[in-house]
Image 1 (cartoon, rainbow, N blue to C red):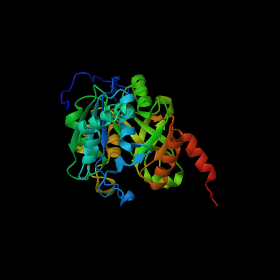
Image 2 (cartoon, rainbow, N blue to C red):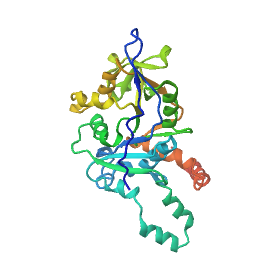
Image 3 (cartoon, rainbow, N blue to C red):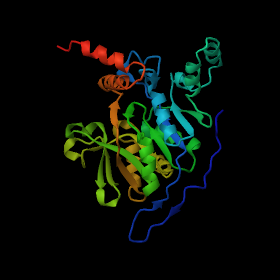
Image 4 (cartoon, rainbow, N blue to C red):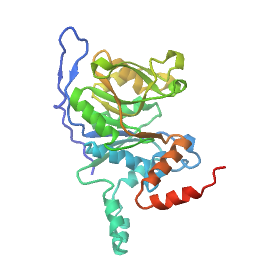
Length: 314
């Protein structure tokens, strides 16, 4: 059952003293996670021709389920999926399948039945919003505005898989509880890779506050080699910035540009997270993640290690 009831009274702002330009956003519990899943996943064709890239499995779970589990572990109870065409499989995955549950129960497969029922725990609701045009990440986030309301929220890009405990979003929620404002996850990348990411400049003396953010700069123009990865905790003021942001790199509405527009008014902090990141938007990153998760999986880890020992890599 979709939950469209919102609380809009728990994001409080105070003007800073006159000597500071930006305003404090008091920390609040983050209850909503937004998952932009409208992309076509062309780098994985033909596998993604009829199935969403977010449904690609890592061992026995699709990427989007890992994303949802991370968000729930961080306290999210409202999951907002911004979808496109050919994405119905995501809705089906998080829906109740009474026929499957009956079949598993009749077969005495109680462990699998429990696993299926835990995909969406009690008290967690799913909302689906269609992104009519593929106008970029910023536009996808803006599409979620009616469901998010006037409160802070997570944005999770499912093809950025981060292995570790606590999860990256939980670390970001903790950062938000200490400093308030928005938080973005960052990671050091090689200088020649800056043109693939949003790159930030950070003031380490001000709680790692971001002072500048540039979308996909060439190495000579990059303010650092600290790259934004697929995790954001954003205050609702981002929506007004997205409304007024023109099309940027690639002719799309860039979330990076809207964040840049916020920096003078609202604090945005960078978090160097703990965990191993796998770029599952690339074939190599996807294969690395599959191996890493298989080696940690209680059912297959030992046998898989034995198999890997027999592989001739010459």
